[in-house]
Length: 329
Image (cartoon, rainbow, N blue to C red; front, side):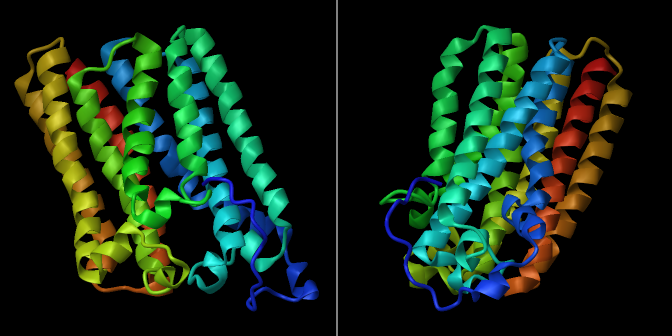
């Protein structure tokens, strides 16, 4: 998601002018990827639950953190549309058409829309830091915007080198979750980091299944994603690991939180909560992994991307409720 300001390469797949005048609202909804937005809020919801378990929850700070997460996610999606579009990477993609690649909107418009989202994220972030007093986090915010922009942009986009999952894990997992907790209470216990790892892996699964969908067309454009580097079989195994391991991490985090933060000694109540959370998350993980394990390819993987996003939201909500419950039971 970084700037690529070179000339727009010609594309034989772009529609003619009449075709380019399609439904703009629908096209913008696709490029913003509305289905991914609930997943962007998941780590903030998890962080809010953790803050509640610690007794430091603040609604205004949680809402601001959620706004930052949404603005960064939308900006990332727009930047990806712009950079991949001007490179020609999206000309042969199997998913829904993109604004830049289809020619429906001028590349500069998409780029400045991404800039606008990043600016909004920055303003909301500054408001959040003003409330919390943690001004050193400005550097973290700048790094997050840079990571979003340089994913597919610039002369050496890291997404084309197979490093996308690393940055997604860090910023949409560790930073988003722990940051939400930190700006509310000024501390991040070990069990928060454990749960952040879980939701970070699920965030990575969204990117993995998205790249699995385009695994046959990306190499032609020099895009060697992690899925491309691993190959079909190992990429599918990695996806399954990304959705199943968080279940174990979540239970471990809940157990740790129960042991260190609980204000009651009701062992039976704590055990029942762990069983319910484990069952819900295990069933969700199993459902999400089925299409990928079953060999779905191309457009058949689009529902799997949607389900992975819903799974991340479920994980965030269930873990937040679980943390509140185990520390109060």
